[in-house]
Each structure stands twice: as C-alpha cells, then as structure tokens.
Length: 378
Image (tube, rainbow, N blue to C red; front, side):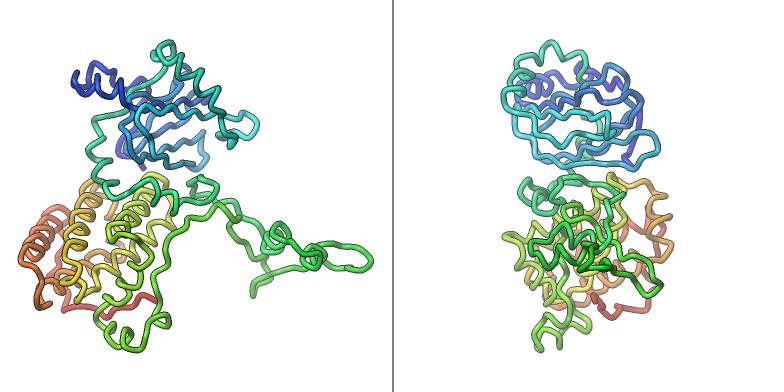
C-alpha cells in the first residue's frame, strides 16, 4: 500500500531543483532492473508505478536504506531492502521461468560494464521520486543498513506469501544425521514415513527457514527476575530494559519499530503489523523508563507521529480502530506521562501536542477511558 501509484515515466530530472539534481547525478545510486515485465507494479519506498516496456530501473537514488518492491498481476508483493552507497550500481535480473527476480549475484565485471554504459541507459531510467522522499525519510530515520540486515529474512525477500513446508520436510532438509534422514525414508526397514499433524489431523506447516522476518522477541514474564516481575503489574519498564540489551543503541528499537511498520504498509505483511503493535504497547506501558529513557520516548513520539501522519486517514479506521487498539494504548501512555513523577516537562508538552493532533485528525476521544490498563505482554 504505497501512498500513490501511477504509470512510468515519473517526473523527469527537470522537475528536481537543479542543485539537487546535479548532486544526485554525481553521487546518487542507480538500480537496474533487467527484463522486468511490462505492466507489472514496481515501487520504491513510498511510491509505486505500473511500468512500461522501456523501463530499466531508477537513477539518482539518495544514499541510505530504501525498500524496493514489485508485483505481477494479482500476485502478492515481493520486496527487499537495500542500503545504497553513493554512486552504487545495483543490478537485478528478471527470471522469466520463475516470474521473479533472479537470486543469482551479478558479478563485479558485469556491474562495471553497466556503470560505464549508464549514459546510454539514461533514457530508460526514471529519477527517484523526490515528491515523496521527505515522507520516506520520516518513516525510516532510525533504520540503518546493519539493523535492516539483522531483521530481514536470510533469503533477503520480504513477502506476505511466505514459502511454507511441512514439519517433516523441514526436518528432512535440515537433517545431518542418518537417523534423521531415515525417518523420512520409506523402505523395508522403514515402512512408514514420519508425519506431524495438529489436533485436527492436518499437516503442521512452517515457514521455510530463511524466509521469516527476524524480529526481536519481547521478553516474557518468566524471563524476568522476581523483582522485575513485581514491578510490571502497571509498568513494563523492566521488559523494555531487558529488550534494549539486545541492541547496541536504544534508537535501534525505534528502527525496528519503523522496519515493522514499513513491512506492513508497503510490504503488506500482517505479521509485521502485529509486531509493531506489540512494540507500541510495550513503550506505551512504561512508567520508570519515561524518566530514565527520556530521549527514547521523545524520539518515539516523533516516530509514531510520522507513522500516523503518513497513513491515509481510512487506513487506521479499517485496521486499528475496529478494536480500538491505539486509542486504548495511547490513552494509557498519555496517563502515564501525566501521572509519573519526574517526567521531563518537554516530554509532557510533546505528548500533550501529539494527543491534540490525534484528537483533531482521527477524532479519537482519549478521555472516555477510565484510566491506565493492566500491562499484559505475554
């Protein structure tokens, strides 16, 4: 669900400020899509298009993390993140047999040939859509290349239609011992094949290893010490602190929040939306951390503000307001900010302005809730 969709060609370099165009022509990255099918959907960050027969990629891509995605016909979107370096040339080839991008790596010699021929390819490369770059930057400001690499599936592919295998197939493919391999072999010595089924007799399906998103798990109650559990009836700060030990910088948690949101908004992966909700609920259920992690919560408010701002208004009507998740969760957060002793006045003021913005835009009434809710992260 990108913010807009159109047909190539996208605006020419003439529509970009001349100074910026010159800088990006010299320093911007290039993405080459070879043999990409006509009339397929192609998207980058916050904008997508239906491509024509002459389309061969994008030029003048600002350095940094970007999300590339595509879809043919009614097939689900498939995407990938890439941390573009200045003047980088990234080449992807379309495989007509699999109707998907080839997973084969393009060697440096071939990339060098494309780099030397960029001028001749220029008419077939659309410039990066700068009319939506500000929105993308706001949605990805805490996402870094190393963090994205850590969170992405090992296959590198982001897709809502994950490749599923039966549990016995997963074990067979991962088998390293003769015993494990024999469990899936049918012969005189092994007349039956090992089967795994649920309570209804249906095969137990798993996402094929390498295709699942690698989000950090929020610590459960039993993972905390007795003293930490004692304080979390109304305060999730202990869980937050335990989760933050998984990161080298507290802002990486916000990077994961942004990653989950982008994977849902552009990648259309519902699992990512569920993880986003869990992180929002965790952050909105803290008391002590509001004081000890002041900057984290200032940045969290800004991150959440841009996420809600960049979504169509009916997006949250359909997805969130149906079960009132955000109104309840944010009412809890605003109450915590107001009642926790020692909260920075600047954070209190930012929370007040954010609450006012949400009330005006979404018509959410935070005053209907009686008070903070009991924290339950399990």
